[in-house]
Image 1 (cartoon, helix red, strand yellow):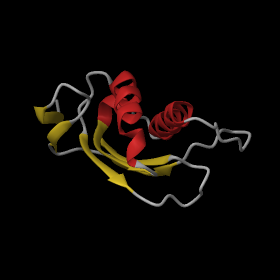
Image 2 (cartoon, rainbow, N blue to C red):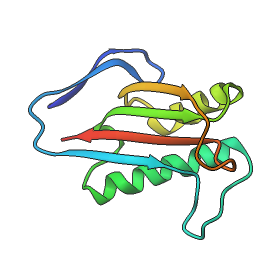
Image 3 (cartoon, rainbow, N blue to C red):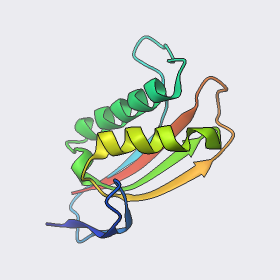
Amino acid sequence: MPNRAINPTGVSYAQAHLAEAPARWLFVSGQIPVDEKGQVPADFESQCRLVWRNVETQLRAGGMSLQDLVKVTVFLSDRQYREANYKVRHEVLGDCSPALTIIIADIYDEAWLLEIEAIAAV
């Protein structure tokens, strides 16, 4: 297996993730909580699930899946969303354990409560 988690935490991320000689890399731009109709859900959990769906859409377009993630960066608009973010991330990623960074940031659009960027390798 070319990718493997190093020191996985058991909660959908690892302290590091090794990609040995990958043939392809996919760099996913920050995905936002906007659906195909341009709508933004009002609550955090709905936004978070939508952002992860958008990440998965980009991965599929590159011929990859969540299993191929090696690095994820989550930008939260407020610390109050930490627990909900953890819950949804763990539901979505399950046993996938990419390296992970979470940053509290002033998000580009005030309606967006988070943004996620990712790197995948196969």
